[in-house]
Structure formats: structure tokens, C-alpha cells
Length: 208
Image 1 (cartoon, rainbow, N blue to C red):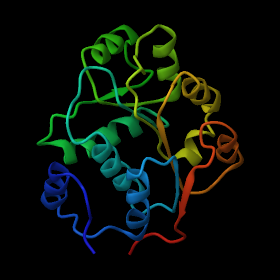
Image 2 (tube, rainbow, N blue to C red; image 1 turned 120 degrees about the vertical axis):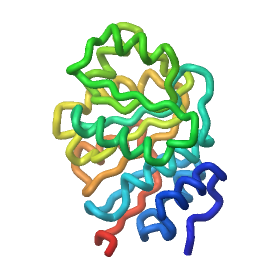
Image 3 (cartoon, one colour; image 1 turned 135 degrees about the vertical axis):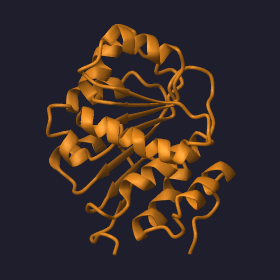
């Protein structure tokens, strides 16, 4: 069964990338994310979590740029993960005007602040760097629609919990998405805060 009810630029990107049929994880998760619910996606490597996240982010942002402040913040564990994820986004957004930006510790923070304020839609960043940017008013979260934890099982093992929690408490209204290979105690703890009443999709096996 093909992907359903996606906006036209996203459908065209999927066709160009020859992604025709969703994986079981994608089939179960994309519609739930589209509904606006907070979401845990729990599945092994190879189940299609990252592609589901990219499709859902682009769909929720309607495949187009809007003003200057970021509308999606995606947490990753390190610089390499940020750059790799940005490249994956660019495969989908090649013919869209959505703007992505990576923020990690090895960059000059003043340059990052200037770049972000020049206008971005999707920020892919490490928790430590977002915390630093936020502390110097280097990022405006007033228009944020999505806060996403990618590879959360690994991310929260790196002392990132407090940094992510702090940012979540500074956001007035937002949809939260967590993608992980397995549930950990720290991820369960998020259900006491911004992931309360979140929908869960669990897939036990990777796609063939």
C-alpha cells in the first residue's frame, strides 16, 4: 500500500527517491504523528524510523519555508549524526525551500547565532549546543512546532536529559516525537513531563 494523504511536494520527493511502499513502522507511525499527537516510535535499526521522522517533519511543516524562526528542532547525539541527518533531509527537500541547519559544539557559537537568526526551518543539533544557544538568546523557539529526539536510546545516555528537559520547559506549545530502538528508564521518565499521554508504536523486527 503506498503512502497516503501527504502533500504534493513530499509525494514528488518520495517518487523521485523511489520510496513507494512504507515499512510496517512507517505505516503505523506517520498517520499518528500527522494527527498531532506526542509520539514514541520504538523499533530496531532498519525499521525505517529516520525516514518516518523526515517524512513526518516535512509533512507537518507543509514542505515550505515560513518566516525566520525554527519550526522543528531535532536532537542528535553528535556532530557526525547531525551532518548525516542533514544530508538525508536534503535528499527529500532538494526541490523545496525548507531550510535546514546543523548546530554542534565544534562551531563558533556567534556564527551559529547569526546563521539561525538569518532564517531556518529545521535545526538539527546536539543538546549541549542548543542549551548554550538558548542561554545567550541565540535561538528563538517561539514558533517551534516539533521537538524531536532521534536515536533517543543513545542520546539520553550522554547526560543530555537535563538539557533537553530545560528546553522543553521553555516551549509553550509543541508536538514531541521520540524515536528509539528500545525504552530506557530515562525515556520512561519523560512520560512524567512533556511526553505525558504520548502515543506509542512498537515494532519488534526490522524491515526486510
